[in-house]
Amino acid sequence: MSQPAPSMSEVSAEDFRFIHEQVRDFVRTAVVPRENEIMREDRIPDDLRTVAAQMGLFGYAIPSEWGGIGLDLTQDAELAMEFGYTSLSLRSMFGTNNGIAGQVLVGFGTDAQKKEWLARIASGEVVASFALTEPGAGSNPAGLRTRARRDGDHWMIDGQKQYITNASSAGLFVVFARYADPAPGAPGIAVFLVPAHAPGVTVGPKDAKMGQEGSTTSDVAFDSVRVPTDALVGGDEAAGYRAAMTSLARGRVHIAALAVGTAQRALDESVAYAAQNTQGGQRIGDFQLVQAMLADMQTGVMAGRAMVREAARAYVDGTDRRIAPSAVKLFCTEMVGKVADLAVQVHGGAGYMKEIPVERIYRDVRLLRLYEGTSEIQRLIIGGGLVRQAVARS
Image (cartoon, rainbow, N blue to C red; front, side):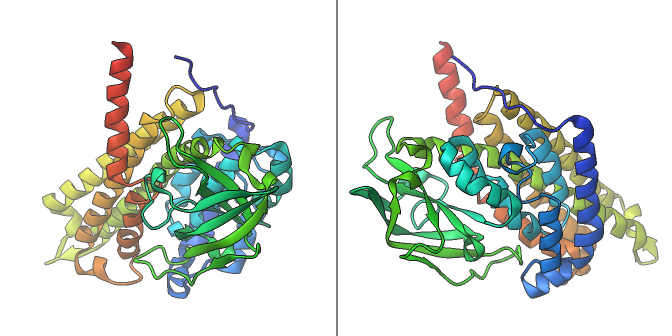
């Protein structure tokens, strides 16, 4: 069985070290001190967005020929671990451009589509939003109800999407719609590029979420939205499902790396708290049960980091683009939930107070087990994939 072609980075190790250091400095000196401001105002300050765009963060995973930096997934994962160290809404601001929306165009768009959109996406002029999830179809795209039908030299799109990240600021929606009933080997799903200003596109109000203040999600309605045939990604209806699966698999490694970065922050906050605070006149870090919690947190972070790097390498060299992304996403997002819970426990009552970092982290990370496929979906992909591999070898 042939393997996918390797994906080579455009950025040397030496150049990436500089990029990594710049991102780390930006996150820790410019963003971390403003986390409570982001949480209270439920938005990323304009000056931080401007700096992020100037640094190229809206296009770091987009090839340089289209105006991006051209990082591969191993490098993307290292940056994601830095982005995870602060409010997750920072990463959401440019995550769809580099991730599931932008990568659909990078991997499946025609040259004309790439020329029209990718440079503007990479610069941050255009925010691209990934419109897949809808009522009754979340982790499993096979349940899509949004329909697309041919109408002469155009397509007409009707349907309702929900929980769409960056919908309120999007200039482009990458819309998944059903053009035919599913059949064996043919899910009947296509992908369309729909400008946000197209007649019939309606973006709903911003969702009120448990956490990740500053990151916006909204419903998006498509009511007889008319787009030309060249809005069909790849010029091929059948490319849609492959685009969804490929983008989601890549995104799962990224989300896992994000989880590791957040777990590291929760651990750092907990170690500092345990070392500086006392209970009954004794430093709480000297209590053995507190040390045991810190030990479990450290072990999870180290395991997750190693697993992310291995999964990213396997994706880049083409040896595993299905099971490993699901396995690392499952482990790391479950791990960060446990680490966040322990972090609140180490902090005691203080950990339940607003504007204490671990309280925000506890709420923020719950979403990581849901998007890019729930933990339950990851288990099905992993288990089913292992069985199919065994059958193929027999």
